[in-house]
Amino acid sequence: MKIKWGLYFILTFCLLEITARLYFNFTWGTPFFAQDEMIYHFYPELKEVRQRYFDDKTPPIKVLILGGSAVTDHLYCDIDFELRNICRKNGIDERKVSVFSLARSGQTSFDSRRKREQLSDLKFDYTFIYDGFNDCRANNIPRENFDIDYRHFTFYYQVMLYEDYIKNHISILPFTFHFIWHSVKEKIVKTPHVPPYYAVMKDKVLNASYWDEGKEIKTVASFSRNLNEIYKVQKEIAGQKLILSTYAYYSPPDYSLERFYKKELDYQEQKWPTEIYGDARYIPDCVKAHNEILKSWKDSSNVYFVDLNSIIPKNKIYFNDICHLTDNGCAIMAQNIFDIIFSTQ
Image (cartoon, rainbow, N blue to C red; front, side, top):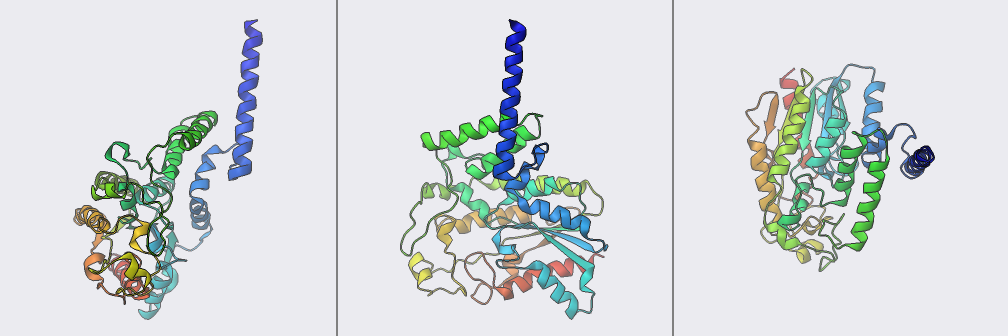
């Protein structure tokens, strides 16, 4: 009888395992026998960069870009294009520099850390990190619900499930059960969390939940730890250098949501209001706090520091909104990266 029940258990377990693997194969594209590739569901750009890294047969200076939309090539600042342009102007073969961008819209230092850890086996001569703004959204939560790994975002909770279970278990079931439980719990129990985005209309924000909590800057320890972990990965391979910069931001003293939509502010494009990140009163202080953390790295070994927030002038020639640079602002950023790369070769 015990043997029979044992056989039933094994068969049930195998059936559930197969079902779970098939589900993630069909919905996320995760290979049946390679659950570790589930990370590509969260960060498909990792697969693209890894493939390109090994396809690149030339031995150029490899530069990795980490950050959010401000340095995402198809949105605002195309570092690759700008660096090639500067190389041509200086009579340098543009093929000497190969830029690998992992920057994506809305991502934080948490994402930068996880991505660099996933590519810890690859050597990049320089890694440029431009983080410190999107992290501020994580403050929009009560202190008791704040998590240092930003698990109060549904997306980051799921990424951490991958970290906790896929890396440490042969079976995919522990991840699957926790994934389902959290998804169901979110719909039943109204637990405070940061929404994927804030819906901003011309005169109001529709889902400004817990905005008053943004006044308390809770992200400093998280931001600092993420930078430290990236630095550790960089040190594992000799010859890798880190380029850190303060985050350049511009909040005009007469800022208001109404004036933003009427295009009355000293911005160029005026497409994204500050309110998509949180209460406009609190965001500048948060970025300032993160910039202070960045400044503390300026004398660290194998780290090059740029204070872009002080270098880039605060007006519409250089800013589209509070955090996205114009082409002129991007050119200043790229020039500073170029100067570091070619003064240290």
